[in-house]
Image (tube, rainbow, N blue to C red; front, side, top):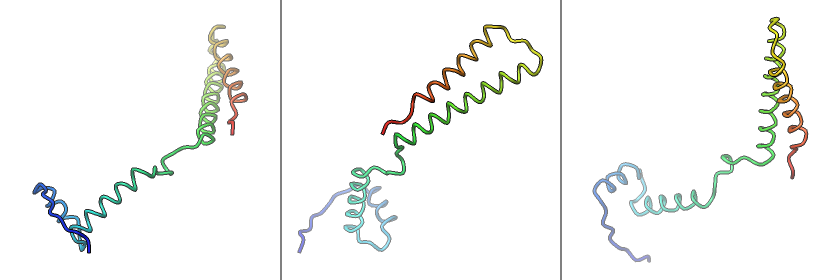
Amino acid sequence: MSEKRMLIMDTDTVQKIEENRGDMTVSDFINFIIDSHFEQTTEPHQSDLVTKEEFHQFEEGIRDLLRSFLEFFLSYGLELGKQPTDGELDKLSQKLQGLSKTIKTKKPQM
């Protein structure tokens, strides 16, 4: 038989226990709360974590999206008949080339 001890607690804490313990005894409820707390702190939730491969796929997708936006805005500006300055066109071309190079060179390493 287990040894029993008295635990002195604040009235508010006792009231919270009484409101939430349901059919459990006070002792069982406190044991349940303590056990579930330690299980949560020792085991990280795997669904909250991202693997390196998933992160690299996300990064590659964002770079593709950015490149698509730059291409769209570049072609849209040219179709309107607006003549961009040489500097603007060169900057956008360099950005597009840089993005495509980083996408090709940054493949996930397993």
